[in-house]
Length: 124
Image (cartoon, rainbow, N blue to C red; front, side):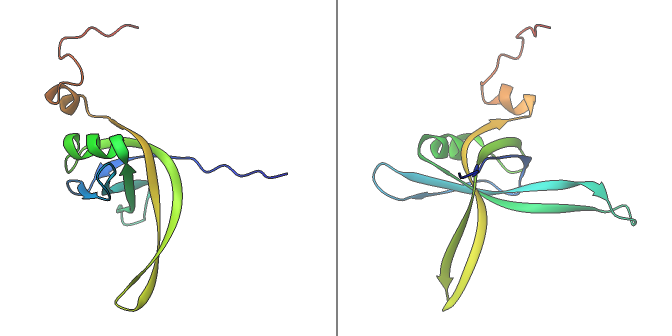
């Protein structure tokens, strides 16, 4: 019996504007890095930050490239994937989040992008 489940949800801020790469005529890949503060502070009051590479494919990739900007807080769900590649005759390994969905968490950005109505009433 196998007990395997690969699901991750991350919340962080983009370290720079997303970049995109056209893989084929119908497939795009958009990638960026999320900065995520750890939940504790060191004795010197500094907070450690993790930098997690994220890639999105297909329609999500297209939307992310159009909507996301450096510094935006977002939530991304997907799976963790290890990737091995060779660069300058050195084999490297990277763990990244392959995102399936994302959500912009800053209301100001949502309004500016026209994703929500600025005057919409919230219901309790």
